[in-house]
Image 1 (cartoon, one colour):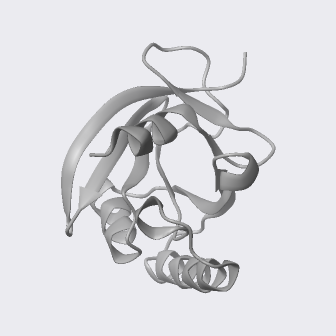
Image 2 (cartoon, one colour; image 1 turned 120 degrees about the horizontal axis):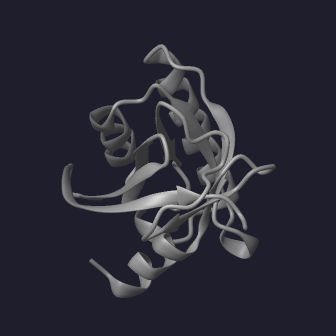
Length: 141
């Protein structure tokens, strides 16, 4: 896995715009949305490379339709900040395999999946999980 991409995923923020979460190696108070099982997925910028706004919007709409077709009701979320802020979905009730499949379908390098405050950065490549990094999702201090 690319070190720069890994650093970007580990160092960014995730979740709804009004309450961001961050990945940490140790537990701390989590954001309120970190309950039950959940996933944060995006269809933007496949493989960590820039895609056009039109392509990103189309792919994100397709992801939203797929998640809804799977019987889940996502909440709008964001991955990243500034120029790398990407529209994402927070999906409560998602299973790990579902989140990974959504990520593969849209060419993502990783998805975030968790249960409560325990989070897993799930690395994807060539249609399979290639690694899992366990962290805690924490709120701003």
